[in-house]
Length: 228
Image 1 (cartoon, rainbow, N blue to C red):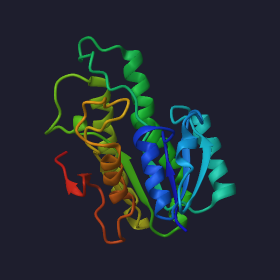
Image 2 (tube, rainbow, N blue to C red):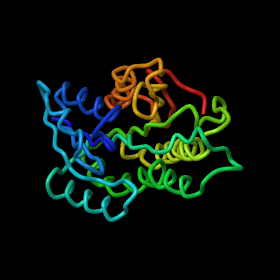
Image 3 (cartoon, helix red, strand yellow):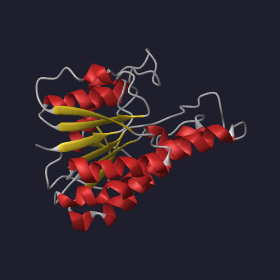
Image 4 (tube, rainbow, N blue to C red):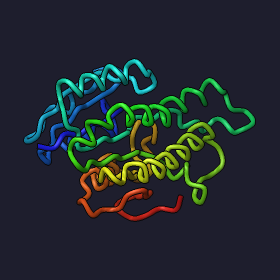
């Protein structure tokens, strides 16, 4: 049975990713700062879901989680960095609140980076893992738009992290890709978003379950490449 880790998974897109993975027989570590909402993922017909607390913005929490994975779980096949924060539509670069910018930096960029470092030995054990960084077109130099400076800049950095990691992990046969799930009807996306949570999650699963000869170091939505 494959084992996957999903961060920020107690609601919305992350919770749906957990449901879809478990429904395909994957053992999933559902992680979030609090357990609230996590029980909604437990009704699946296959696989196994294990909850563990993880604050992606806290290096000590990441290390504690990594220790748990090493001693109690073992090999990790898939890491999905889904946790994200601060779609700051009310800011621009000149009015930005740097407290918000720094929080976004910790969660959207440094958190995934630290977690990948911490979990790397368990990813390498399987002889070919998958890392999926849930990003956004707002972090693309080609497709981005005015506003949301904290979110856009930190997602652009996450995209670059994806590119660098894909090269550094190539010899371990670990595929690393960024995925934009699109504008999805979540608490962050709002009810006017055109895409369902199920559609957004399916896009992420595509990258999580790539075959061994699948792409790495790319930016995708629904399995199609996006411009950086």
